[in-house]
Length: 312
Image 1 (cartoon, rainbow, N blue to C red):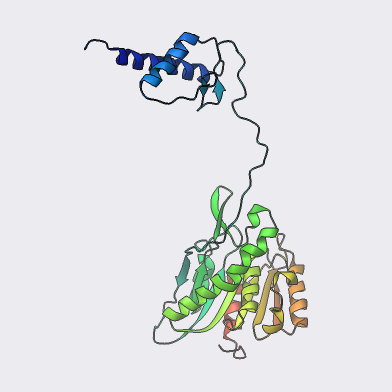
Image 2 (tube, one colour):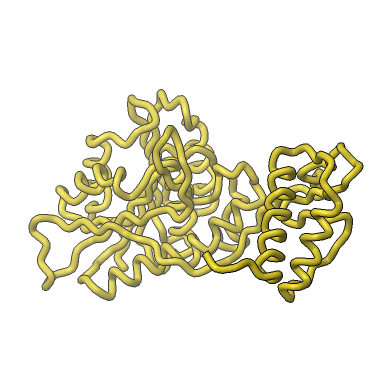
């Protein structure tokens, strides 16, 4: 080892002094610190061309003020005077849609398209069972993914309206862009790639609300809307003036009479209100709960293929 120099000694003194301050701060108790050592550290730092702001040797990273006489430290963290908040911002995002094709798919002839909207806490993947049943009946089925992910029962689920946040004021802000822009974009993108004839939108539970809303608002795109297990019906969630212009969209409401999660009365209310507004509405009750039975999907297929359906 080479001979000691004043500069080297100053550096060592500085390091030892700062380690002493850091160690004292780390244990949360300020003990008597040799003021000579402390000031020696300052002198050494100055000698190293390091600018130091000295205020009873404040330890900046920890918030402690080191004093040679005070043995009671201030609180590590000051109490927050303003609560934490979350802001929601509009943004453009890429969202997936799973497209299922029938075995006899022929790119030279048009097929009916069903856009199938999963329920709250589900996913496009999980709703694939419904899609595969409808595909087996000869339809192209597109299953978009709801945009808002959250944990439910230890797994990842998806939400159409930020319902899991528990703030009703966010529902319209979250849902309206999906109704007016996202779901119509799904239809237009698929129609640009594949030969599509009539388009129907089917939804389960929360997805049923979205299905009815997007079909009525975008009545130029859809021949009909199919609802399973509608959880609630409030005319106010449709944009103003939308109900008066969408009469050519046919509505099929299916609901389990033993549904303990979404009351059958919600579908009855939807039937009564939409019928009074001039819509062609069919309500079909079935024995079962909050579910989408295969036998009812067979009925949906027959309803779509009925000759009196409007053409787009």
